[in-house]
Length: 349
Ligand SMILES: NC(=O)c1ccc[n+]([C@@H]2O[C@H](COP(=O)([O-])OP(=O)(O)OC[C@H]3O[C@@H](n4cnc5c(N)ncnc54)[C@H](OP(=O)(O)O)[C@@H]3O)[C@@H](O)[C@H]2O)c1
Image (cartoon, rainbow, N blue to C red; front, side, top):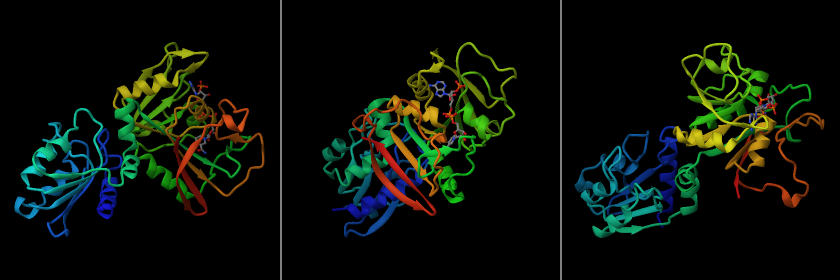
């Protein structure tokens, strides 16, 4: 029951992608007492109205009275940027509230109890798995207190990201690359390395760009510095020859055996409010991330091309599994053609 309306809540919620972090994606549908939809809304941007408030404020209390409110996350019960949604729902005389997932946030939860105490019928768990998947970044942040990490790769059928001579332009089609740029905007930051920046001199349009540059090899005239906030990850003992531009911030991380501790980097960026990272790098950083089991999700674009060269650049170059039973296993969640290529979305099992 209410699955159709809940699916609509998910669609509405997705309009907030890239704008609501660190908040969850939330959509809301309101039905009158005869079951006809009379309003809907969603959380548009961090700091703005929650989905329930967005939908309720389009109605008068007499229009909403006796109606059913469907929302994918438990209505909040706290004073944050806005007052508690549970109070507004009660004030508008809503008779029934239908929820997909309960709110795991200790600051906000308790809406269900508040509503029930006020005599509102509450139904929970409608399309709960889909609701959890929609807000996987939010649940990961609250439950594990760390940044959600997504690895994006673009490979040939034989899993290569470049030829042995370093040529990598372009493996996938213009349409696939455009979609990858769209996905990028759904996350708080992108991450890459000085090796990839020096090889391709990309712009990588995004508001927050994190670059691992242990040896301070980058020149501030490169395209990547032309836009967005740049966070450079450096060790303690190397310096740039030039003064960094105003949009550059440094984060220092300790080195061991000429490497950074990646967990340290991700902890530090979580500490500055970056809740999700889209990694667009080459085989070494990808391989390290897989080796340390840090990737929550992988989005892999595949082009119908074969390099047929064992010395081409592999997508992952970390620590090999000696046996199939020792491989890292992911779960396929989405598979879509973007002709002539396709992409697959995998999540950690
Ligand atoms: N098709 C795709 O999806 C895609 C995406 C991006 C890049 N590429 C291609 O990948 C190629 C580059 O591959 P790559 O394997 O050489 O590059 P990479 O993985 O992007 O970068 C390797 C460098 O990253 C730094 N690094 C990685 N892990 C580190 C750690 N734990 N601590 C400190 N630094 C760390 C090191 O830099 P230092 O040497 O400075 O320590 C290392 O040399 C380029 O040709 C590029 O075109 C393809």
